[in-house]
Image 1 (cartoon, helix red, strand yellow):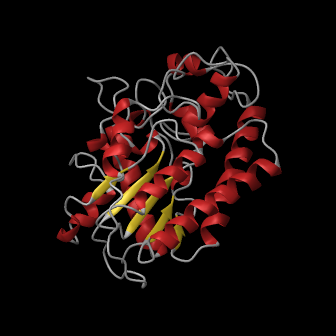
Image 2 (cartoon, helix red, strand yellow):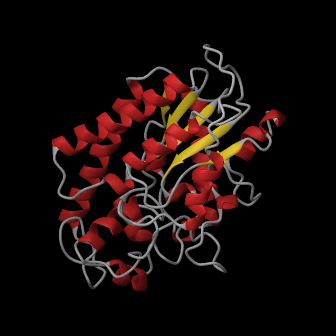
Amino acid sequence: MQAVTLVRAAAALACAAGAVAAGCGSADDSATAKTSAGSASAIVTIGSGREATRIAAPSRGWPNAMAIIGHSGSTGEDSDPAQPHVEIRANSWATGTNPAVNSVYQRILAHNPAIRGHNVNLAQGGANIHRIAEQARHAVRLNPSPDLVLIQAIDNDIVCPATKSDFTAFERSMRSVIRGLSRGLPRSKVFVTSQFGSVPTYARALTPTQRKAFGGTGPCAFLDPAGRLVPKEVDRLERIIHGYEAAARAACRAVARCFDDRGAFGRVVDRNAYITEDLNHFSVKGHAKAAAVAFAAMRRVGALPR
């Protein structure tokens, strides 16, 4: 699993069941969590309503403007040990400006100076697909219009147990988000991430003390109260996560100019260094890893020039 996506998914499920002590106070632990003041102001301030000039032709080459929509995996929440639970958007793997992260934005900037300052982060702690849809509506009103929109979703939509109807509903909602972006930003490309890491590698990355803090009981509680792995629940949560990933991938592939990472995030092996103290978000090193993996995947699938 991971310090920010798969981890938070499991934490949200366990918190809902009253099973976990750690991470339940995070802004992104559940779809019902309140958005922090910083996140809310970002949405209100950035969504100016101004209409940019749009040309109905796919953009070529490196983007001149970009945006990220999603949950707190993209906001830098809890990434500064000196400021626990605070969003440090400069540390975002997607749009951040901290050189230690070398975000996707910074990597694009190295190829295209025209993107400087056009790195909008609309992500919010606790955002599920419906709140991400609201973020997408803001994104299409940005000026300049983003040539590239990244989507980091899934976490706050996961239910356990999950059925085929849950995956179908998520796919329908995700497809609506992507189609809205495609229609509102006809020159832009969209890039959708999978879940970062895996349940087994996340569990192995935790220290014995962290495993006990994270452990619980109930559906998808993959560590028991003593911190021991529960293989049945590991398998269950992995299957559920892959179900949501498949739904996101299908939604993306149904819309022109949408690219998915083809499981790149999910193939990452979690490390303790990627995890913050709340066991729920990316550290600076975690954001740096996510940036490197995302950028490479984007070039590989055609969302960015090779």
